[in-house]
Image 1 (cartoon, rainbow, N blue to C red):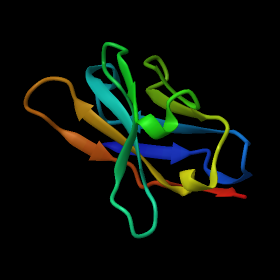
Image 2 (tube, rainbow, N blue to C red; image 1 turned 135 degrees about the vertical axis):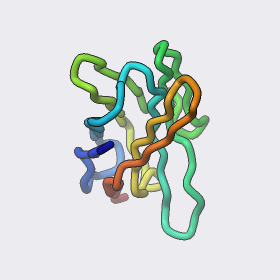
Image 3 (cartoon, helix red, strand yellow; image 1 turned 30 degrees about the horizontal axis):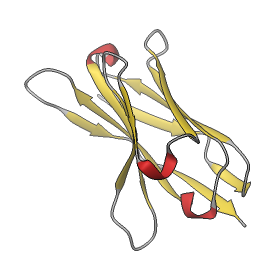
Amino acid sequence: QVQLVESGGGLVQAGGSLRLSCAASGIIFGSNHMGWYRQAPGKQRELVARITSGDARNYADSVKGRFTISRDNAKNTVYLQMNSLKPEDTAVYYCNAVRAYTPRTEYWGQGTQVTVSS
């Protein structure tokens, strides 16, 4: 059974920081591209950051320079360090895993709420 369990969300003031974690089980973690997505009320889910199985990273323009994605394959965990948070970062953040080889598989976590107050 595959599980992606996010943690670390919460309420923070603008300018503050949070670190999200996503612990994976039931997958070969090192063979998956891992991503963080977010969905704000009334908006579509969007990619925030992604790290490939080979450690290549990409970020949404809105978070470049503020957020950092990293992974620890020994702990089957992906992290999202979020600094200089803004009210517009408020959303439910979801962890995503996509297998790096075929057949493609994709899994989602249940989400963790991040609320940034002004």
